[in-house]
Image (cartoon, rainbow, N blue to C red; front, side, top):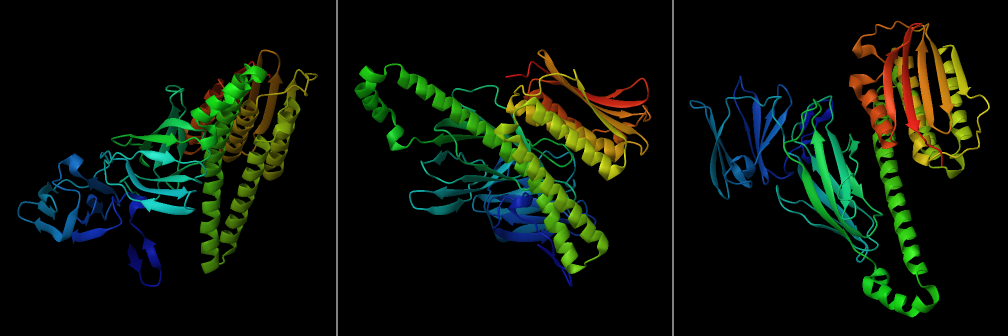
Length: 466
């Protein structure tokens, strides 16, 4: 934790930033020009570069004699540039000539486990040791299980990215990776009973992948009334009356649970990635404005608050079953374009092909949601990066073969640099749109030039009608 007079805490270094343990036994600052702070903990040795603000962790997996270091057990030999670290398993000698560099691939760590237990109505927190195999269990009624992750590569101004997928015995392959940033905590709840494997991967803010992935076994136990023995007894009593209906009901219930689990996962990812990030910025601007209420800060706070409210409305719309029609999608896209026109003063057009197609036809909820979010991403980036004089044209085509959405930034220069093309900062917008297109078996063509000048983002989803 770094303190500055008059400012309070300006920087914190703990498990959330990649430190292997919150229990620190020793601190040793190397003399210039190294400017590296070595930290001995109960779960490994960490080197923190005060110049680059990067963090590296060494454990027994890297050759350290022990992960549990003792108090005041660090000593530096300036003549040989060797660091000696003592712990419960012996003394290690570390070569410290090389600085903590950007090419380092940090390990992905499971920093803590926090779980609500329904039987005792308590919440416990455990801190597993590095490389410890941790079997996870959710009993009937347990509220949640939080996995706190750490990537020891802290860098100011950037955030590590984490992804997870949940594989069951019935779905050994094909499970999707869900990415999230911000607070590195994965919450598991409301899962259908069964045996799962949780796969977790991570990338640093610079895009460097972690050296390892986590594979955690998870068992979600059945309530007593749904255990096989109980079901066998019930089936024997009802076989004469129900026959094959019991099996059909079980299959339908399992399908509903799987659909509900997938919906919760998508909602959790959207809330974490979009609403969570916006509310974090709102909180930051509110704290800054409280200390120094400048008009610019208040304007930023107002803008972020409106964005958070709009995002929540979008998520509510995405799960409203009454909106699973072509008409609801067309109206939402038209409203999006009207808002863009009011906010930017741009000339906008919204067209449908064919003009008389049946707007009452139903669409799959995921097709409707991802199509709208891709259109919103394309319009947002057009407003950010397109010339002020360019006009926006949003065109929706829907027939028995495919759904096609086009967002055109017309009469704009076609030779736009990659960094200013309407794909979002660092290409993240383009990656998000492509990921959403893949989830609905669609194809995305982004930044295609137009003969009249400008560019087009085109989404095509084959046969989306239900």
